[in-house]
Amino acid sequence: MAAISHMLNSLVAILGLIPIRVGQFLGRMLGRFLGIAAVGPMKSSLNGLRMVFGDQLSEKQLRRLNRRVVLHFAQMLFEVPHIFKLNLDNLHRYVYFENEEALGEALAKGKGCFILTGHFGNWELMSAAVTLRFQTSGIAVARPADFAPVEDLLMRLRTRFGTEIIPKKKAMKKLLMGVRKNKAMGILLDQNVDWYEGVFVPFLGQPACTNKGLALIAMKTGAPVIPVFSARQPDGRYRVVFEKEVDLIRSGSKLSDTEENTALFNRIINKYIYWYPEQWFWFHKRWKTKPVCPFPRK
Image 1 (cartoon, rainbow, N blue to C red):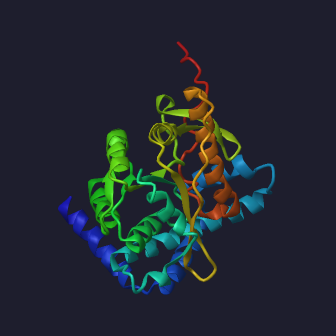
Image 2: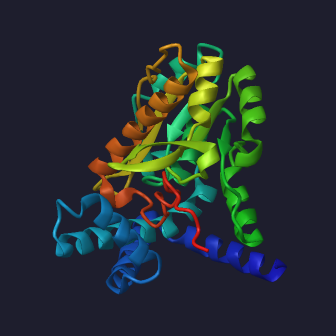
Image 3: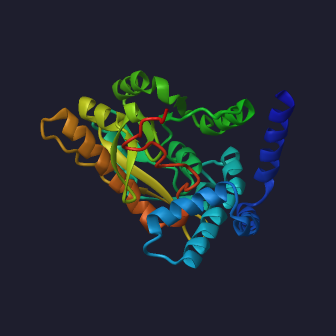
């Protein structure tokens, strides 16, 4: 394990030495090669695109879009190592911010705030850039990687500027502490969960089991929810957009409000995916948990 970890760290260090625009060019070359194959994860992403856009796009258009998805994530391989080089002087080469005052206004309420986002754009770079820009430590909920050397590397990347990473299983207690300490807390809400963790609400037009935790804790604490997303722009930089605080639905019915607010969060995430479909992580099996599970046959 130690040898593999050393190799991974060495590879990341080498990739970080490549100028960012050169790295993005190399990523596009790699993406073109991988996109032609459309096997393994690339086949999974194509199936997801078919399910969502199959009635709007031809098979040729779907395959072209899938290649753009692969192209985007191949570039990310060369971008993420630059987190280790990120500082206030070079931050403008990687990202620029829009409506960033929304975060300051949310934190000024003294209840902390939840950052609603997803596996979109370059979420790793965005998290590092936001933490660096605001010079404040935050919390992010993340599922640990299955392979220890990868998890160690990701932890180094994600905690570089002081962000505390907490596993999903222990998240609620830590998030409540974060509210009391007025921290910004990142929640990536776009992944499948088991039926007992979520509610079934539309995601890209299909029923999807979505984690209900953000709706529950936001309603309980009154902490603002601020959508924040990054999107790659033609110049290679990422536009990091801070939206205004989400106006939560409060009808008085906890069950109904949990479902309605979770659906509202999904609509916000979906908006960015529809705008930039090539920048969402289509390789994930988002609709794996089904609303109705048939009984096993004898």
